[in-house]
Length: 334
Picture 1 (cartoon, rainbow, N blue to C red):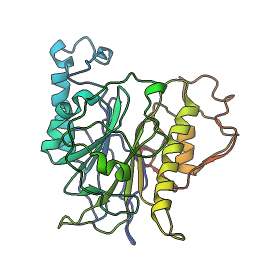
Picture 2: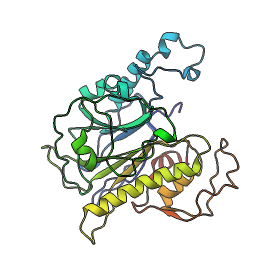
Picture 3: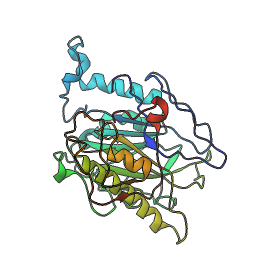
């Protein structure tokens, strides 16, 4: 989005007793994100990198006006810009969309050198990837217990499945079949800390103290989405509903009966929609009723006449805050 390279995510903040949400602000791309103001706060950036990579090619030249030199439209030029943007932002957590599995390691090796670990969705040509500073976060299970260390494993072949419903990556279970790379989440940790749904990647993390040990706060669930584009409002709703239901079930299963299963959660990424959507309604209101109709997206046909669900859809993670709305006072394109 021109002028909006640091689009805030939709999320629920980690805050302890007596801690309040920081004021909303809009930062230029050349500015680092503010440092955490409390021991339990963190920074996060979400960015669709538009599949600009060294393996699968770059074809979206339409984003460049004729005045831009051809050399500046190449992957090497975009790679330098991405490296500059992400390292200046210095976020604790980075959520990327449209990564290529076959070149993920090399495309974003600068983030490994900067101290990030990563998880990557297991299927699809264009995949979400979530990265975190290992000095601030570590993988954990839904109860907040540290994930077991990964074993030594042989390298796996990478694939680049065609994008679409058949390659959406919905495993129906829980463990992500994430592509192996030198610094990605490995098999032993994926089943408890990294799960996947239909174009959604869920990474479970816990905050670390200054000594590198867990702080004892509830786990943070980071839901990184690249929802289906086009006339697919029903599927987008199902994609986010299923991801949140997965978070709820994992948390409830990990805790003794009677414990509050809610935990901090951030939902971010490329929602491929705008205006008053069912996804937004589910996140902010907690439910979408059969009477709900989307509005405000001129690219969608007959929003006023299109029902998105035949029965109420509800999520039990909690009420989310739209950070974009807090900053700019309205719901923008995502």
